[in-house]
Image (cartoon, rainbow, N blue to C red; front, side, top):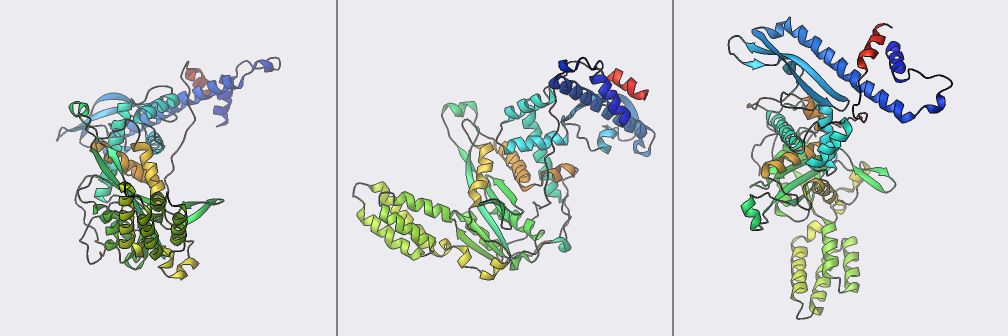
Amino acid sequence: MKCIVDAIVKEVTPQINIYELDDLDFNTILMKTSLLFKDLFSEVMNSILTKIDDFILHSQHRANYEPRRIIERTLYTLNGPVPIRRRYYKHVQSKDHKFLLDELLNINSNMRVSEDITQLCAGLNGMGLSYRDIANVLELMLGEQALSHQGVRDHTMAIAEKLQAIDKAKELDTINTLNRKKVPILFIEADGFWIHEQKKRTKRKKKNKDRFEAYTVVVHEGWEHRHKKDYQLINSQFFTAVKSEDKEQIWDTVRESLYWTYEDLDNTIIIINGDGAPWIRAGVGYFGKAIYQYDRFHVARDLRLCLKKFPELAKKAQKALETDEVWELHPILAEALSKVSIDDTKLKEQLVQMISRIESNQEFIVDYRKRIDKTINNFIFLRGMGAAESSVKRFKKRMKGVGKAWSINGANAMIIILAKYFSGTFGHYLNAKKPELIEQKHENPPLSAAQSPTTIKGKKLGNGVVRGGIVQLRRCYTQIGNMLQRMSSC
């Protein structure tokens, strides 16, 4: 290792002496060193892969395969491009062709970028960058265009297909009853948002604004302090669905995933928080001890809107909501309704609808902390719910905006990748080989009386980390040959 360091130092600073120290520039040294590391990385990786390919030629891996020719490809990584020269084989009997090196090392023949760039792309999608922006970021980092914006989209679609295949084939389902966790309470927060659908050119001219809905569910074990008064969710998991005819189908996935993660699920208290949508409330029927919580943020917001012309009544309504005296809201809203002018039909309609919502959801508006066993407070810190809004915003940041429209397949691919990335399981899925989509027998978890047998899709697998890399510069010269000669003489 010391020989390598000395050779790099000699290559970067060949003529430094005591009289030329004032002429040195840090950026020049940094650029030269970065370029040498980039070239060295490519040469070393190419040598290693070539050696492995030579071993395959004389090993049992090539049984019944005969080499045809050597084909070169380039795989882009955050540390620079890696040229790969490997043999193309033909099976003696079936006449199938394949690259045995790619198969052995789990290198997808259709992929131009490595796993570290794939994780970086997922992170950039999570930050809301478009396909074109991601392609530009990669070009700045790598010094050359690794993927076009269409290439980034195709890559995203291919990765989403792999994630779905792994889920369907249960490739990552290694959790058994001994690994399940026991928790006193679980929290589920659900919400949805609308996405503009792409249309053909003829339909665009007609200004057809068709939309479809995406459903998101976040499951967590509570809250922990992040800093000062800020909190973060504990072991959050994200589940998503796009334009499903059966809106409640997402609960099948949620229930069966939780079954393989938590012990005694049907006897665990589960709080389901939502904005009143029927598909959210239906989730209560999928768990033994589930409690529905009408999202109090939505109630408080709608009360302010309805009573903005009556400040005194608005204060009374806010106080009644804070003290969970929900039965006081009806007479307050009725009093406001009696004071509305005859011409203000819109406000009258809003008040009537609000009164109806309060009557039909009165018991669910009461804070869940007053409806469960208070001893749970001894095991976990409880606070008001409302993570669904912030969770949906993370998806909206990428999928909504001026001019953004999606096909069903494109939206489904993106929302799958974002869900895995936000859950911290994206890296685990990338490390798994894409399985064949075949039927696999599995233990069916016990369901509540109202539910039928379903399939397991999502898993909580731990925290995936997006790996970074040194920012690469544009290649302007190559001195790798001279440096390697110096290294060999050490």
